[in-house]
Amino acid sequence: MNVAKTLNIGDTIGIIAPSGPLKEGSVEQIKKGIEEYGYRVKIGESCYLQYKEYLAGDDKTRADDIEKMFKDNEVDAIMCLRGGYGASRLLDKIDYRAIFENPKIFIGFSDITALHIVFNQICNLSTYHGIMASTVDKWDSFTYTSLMDSLNFTNELFVKNPIKEKMYSIYPGTAEGVLVGGNLSLIVSTLGTNYEINTKNKILFIEETGEDIYKLDRMLTHLYHADKLKHCRGIIYGDFNDCKGSNEDEIIELLKETSERVKKPSLYNLQSGHCIPMVTLPLGAYCQMDTNDQIIKFIR
Image (tube, rainbow, N blue to C red; front, side, top):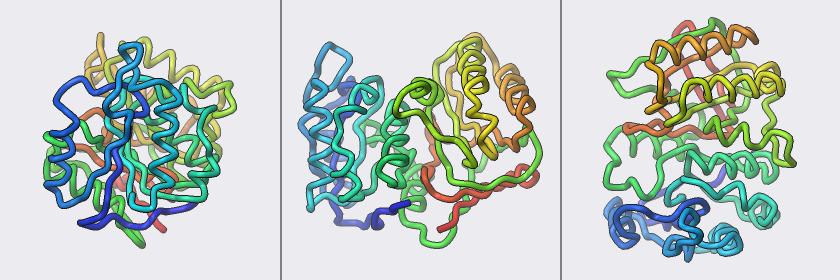
């Protein structure tokens, strides 16, 4: 798996909007906020656009922005503006050779899961399930440190929750393999397509937000019937923020039931997803998990 070079103060971060348009604040405020961390910032055209009310520009513009940032020798890392919807519309429009030949740090989550999957599988590029540019005014010390630790580790990285958030074992055991996954809705949307997620011998990470519990059940059942849970070695459940019509106990029970069906070592409540503070995860990196001691470690 290709790992892009580390990110240092003074490097340039390119901001793109592969999914939805900016809803709050301004691009200029976001640019200034990231510059205050000590980085140069280059803004893609898509960040200023809105198309069909729910897309940040038409598909060609958004796909071109991705390719331009990867090809731009001045850009050291690429961070997505926000999620929403739209990244999956680009999967047949991206020049994957351009990305393969110009490996760079690529950061985002939620709808960006669609791009993580194809960049990992088609471009052999390790990417980062992490914070997005539009929330720069909400980044706290834990969140920023987790991002930098994930981007810059060389030998091993132990992933830990914020102090007051515990991880829980919901199916016992140990497992290891390359980490894949992201947002549950987006993972499921790849099934039956040319961009279907490959979970064989992998550790599968899943997070979600704002879904009714029966929809969570339906999507997890879909993964089960597609053998994606059967083929993985272990499961890490992230944050399930604002999932409706349920309380945390009901969500835990559903996730526990899911893992018991396939007898896969599973951890719950890693604070990665639609939450602040947020853990950044290196997708495509080799992961070792121990549910007995709630340990998640990455090695290179």
